[in-house]
Each structure stands twice: as structure tokens, then as C-alpha cells.
Image (tube, rainbow, N blue to C red; front, side, top):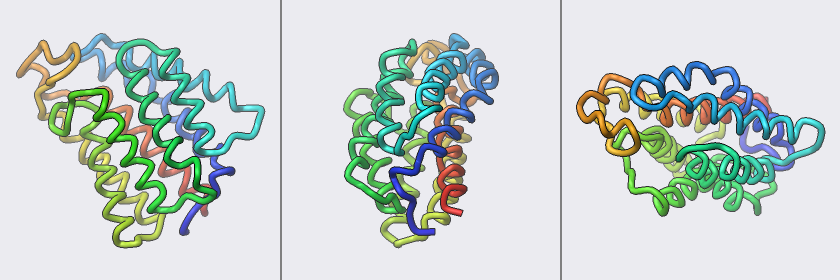
Length: 213
């Protein structure tokens, strides 16, 4: 498996939406431990609206990412709307020129999304945010692209890196958001944004793998 057609990525997008829908209660539960508990509800709202929007029509991968990003940016509350909106819209902008998306193309899309996020937030790896999931996933994809790794193996590495990054947030002290007010007491719980980011990245990777099988 070397690449998938950008125009045929609708199933990947729907798998991402389905993963958020299935985990909405879990995401709110995680968020409720040190936050306000609405992360799952807000994410589910945005992804459900998106899934319903594209259900009856064709949608390419980057086309859909752009629509998803715009919808999340404008329709869901809290900080996650602008954050995920930026991630998906930047991935779409970077990938819009690709007819086929392989390891190097997906790596470029993910890296550009992280850099765009750095332009709007102060958080960096180690601050107990979704960046602790996204950044190592980007690093894994960059390494796979440099080594010209097959897409299937690259996606497996992405999932592993995202999971390890997510797990690391449990022992970190929150530096941003409502949970930062807890100081040391924010330790011992996974970050909600890092959790949703892991779920979304894993669903994306699984969807691409299935598409190319």
C-alpha cells in the first residue's frame, strides 16, 4: 500500500466521525475529571453535523477536512473548535494539491497542521494538551517519510506514537485551560484533548488502511 486517492477519502472522514460519536461519553468523562465535562458533547455535535452534511454526496479527503474544520471552528464551543478547526483546515490546505496521498504527503499535511496550531496557541509538548498526542504522531510520520516507509507501516507507527503521547499526559501537570488551575492535582488523569486527538488519528489511520486494503 503506497497511497490512496484524495477524491476517494470520504470513508476515512466518516470513520473519524463515527469514532468521535462512539466515544462521546468517554471523552466527557475524561474531561469531567479535571475540566468542565463538555468535551465529548461538543466534539460529537460538530462531527455529527459534519457526517450528516456529507452523507448523501461525494466528498474528497481534503475537501471534507476543510469542511469539517470550518464547521468545528464556527459551531462548537470552548477552545477545541478553533484548535481542531485550525488542524483540519491546514491539513486540507496543504493536501489540496495532492491527487494521491501517501506517506510523505500525509506527513506534510500533519506537520503543517501542527505548525499552524503553534501560531495560535502557546502550548507545546509537555504541557498536557492535544499537542502531546499530535506532535509525536507528526514526528513518526516525518521519520517514515524520510525512510520512504510503506503507508501501512507508517500509519501503524503513527498510531503507536499517538498512543504513547496520549499516555504521557497522565503524569503531566496541566499548563493551560481550566485544569491548569488545579496545579499538581491535574496529574493522574489523561488530558481530554489529547484523548480525542488519539481517537481521531487512530480512526483516520484505520480508515486509510481499510481504504487501501
